[in-house]
Image (cartoon, rainbow, N blue to C red):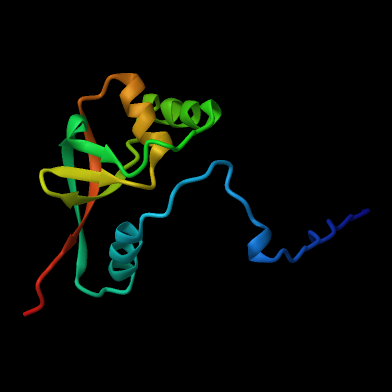
Length: 125
């Protein structure tokens, strides 16, 4: 019996500065701070709720998401996936600064209520 072994994949090291996103998203320092605190279990929790899409405001109007990324999310939503949008509250609005393809796909599909993960500061006892 002749057994052939697959070679291990080659690993190429790339400096992190050389990695680029497919599209540019302006940095939202408030979101970054809240999400970091959530990951570090530092007084921020996630509330998973449904929100009227009209109450969600994008952090930036300048984000140009390629159509292929929106279409991938539209297909996923049509197939039953419900990607959550990470948001934080600012007055009566919810600010979304990281999930543009999903947000735009929900809009194009005509959803009125969407699932969100609300980053919420909790008071320490």
